[in-house]
Length: 167
Image 1 (cartoon, rainbow, N blue to C red):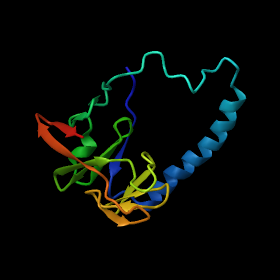
Image 2 (spheres, rainbow, N blue to C red; image 1 turned 60 degrees about the vertical axis):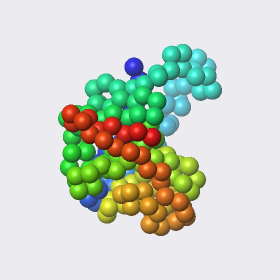
Image 3 (spheres, rainbow, N blue to C red; image 1 turned 180 degrees about the vertical axis):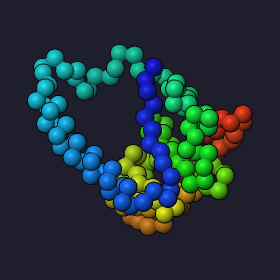
Image 4 (tube, helix red, strand yellow; image 1 turned 180 degrees about the horizontal axis):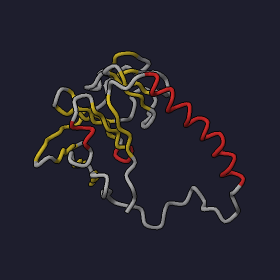
């Protein structure tokens, strides 16, 4: 079963923490790129070909299950979402979830400006799409362009500590 890619944190994460993390990622990507291209061979898989058995849904040890237009998150596993200001980006479902004062808000992670879906930073109670700098509040409303439309909102419900998001 395919591992579901996520990003998470707290809206109060500082700029310093962001710069420390992004700096180390940049350095590692420079060195890693050279390493992996040097190790490539003609037997590498063609990136245009889909995997033999693509997953139809995800889940597993990270407590996230994706089935069609429904995303289920086990809050006992994804404990960061239990705290006000906690957030989670489920890349595979293009869904961004945030705990706003004990209530959950879910929206698309596809920026309404240019369609970027995974290049987000989180801080000061706003989401920033780093592709072109659009900023959105925790409900997906535009705070700063170039985006001029809000992020599409999704409905949420909780039952037995399982957060269900319906697109």
